[in-house]
Length: 328
Image (cartoon, rainbow, N blue to C red; front, side, top):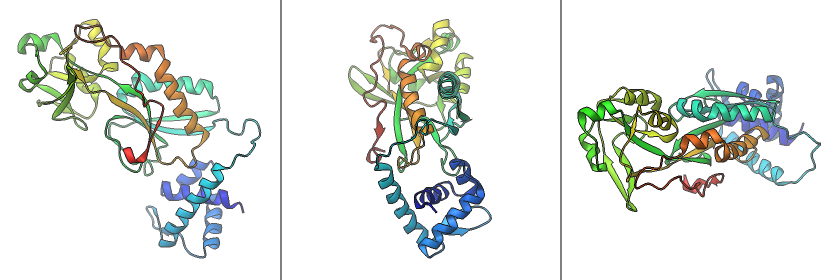
């Protein structure tokens, strides 16, 4: 049997934790996955996996074999081979996870455009507002807005995400309008459970500024906090793409124009760069292109020309580039 394919099968089993998940990821029958694993164990001369009712784990021999399989696939991937026309056309199912707010504002439209370009591809979008284990959850690509990347994952920056501090006119009428970022400590600030619960970061006159905030309402989904902000619950720091339409309609007021909230990165995160499928590779390339040029997205993130604030923001220099593991 083909040892390169056997190595791909074994790596897929090890990364995804089950033969069923590996067969689905490789579009291969369960019987073939089992056969390739048996051949790999025969070549290695040892059992490579501990099998339990819940999941699989590597034996010591399996750990050593996995390292050799990665080396083999890296060498094979570096070889230039003429492929029949169409063999690299994206096809199959790609599982993507992202937050609900980003999915509604951006990913739904971007994925629709991607599927229009690649008719043999399919996408399963899963809404998660926290970091998930990509291997255990069988996720191919996680789209996250963060400045704190996790170790041992590969990330590619797709775009930058600007934020805005805002409140409803009804809240400001009762509690007053903060004039300085430090004034936020005296207000009821709505905070996000998984990020920035107590510290909001700004740039003011070229200087970095961190302000401790607190409030009586927190949530793990920014859309929930956005609705509460419109209802007058307090002051929120929201992604500009979510808050901009409500600011334009007058339902929210943008605060502290001289204080720029820290931009965050929108990243595509995946588990391995060694044997990336055409489906994943083209999706990452497409998302970089889409975020850079889609008129609806660019309108959603455009900053209003407020006093003290330059109109528009420059595209982040790192957008589109893979983030080295040492920086994660």
